[in-house]
Image 1 (cartoon, rainbow, N blue to C red):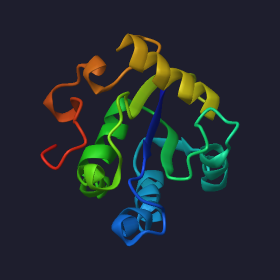
Image 2 (cartoon, one colour):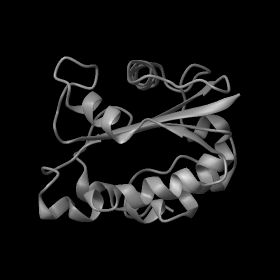
Image 3 (cartoon, rainbow, N blue to C red):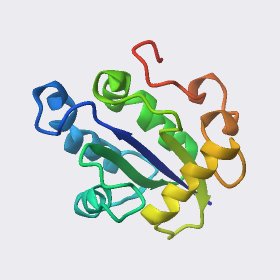
Image 4 (cartoon, rainbow, N blue to C red):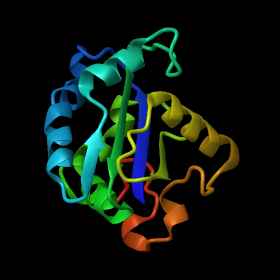
Length: 161
């Protein structure tokens, strides 16, 4: 099985605001690192993701400040290495500076058969399920994988390792 992941947040300021420039200006860089990382399989394209994020009738609500990623990896170790051991980590740590606080989860994972390309609708349903029911085989976070200290769930704070 492969591992799908979805993360979502709402920026504190508009995309062209200088206060989120470091984030906005480096999305292509960070996604490029992801695409070149061992274990990377697939990521929803920028145009498709933007359309899903801004669609007022869509499952993501149409907020123009939404930022999200939907991708598939061969395994949790590969995803964890990208998230916590590449340049991504530098941006992840600055999340509170750029993103509004939210009550539900920002991140969810689930297993998919090789060759599967999850949809935004499925991703939203998975993160909602995770928020309502916690870790399960259907939707889970890092702690569910019990991978040890290197891949435990890390809150998106300045103090996150």
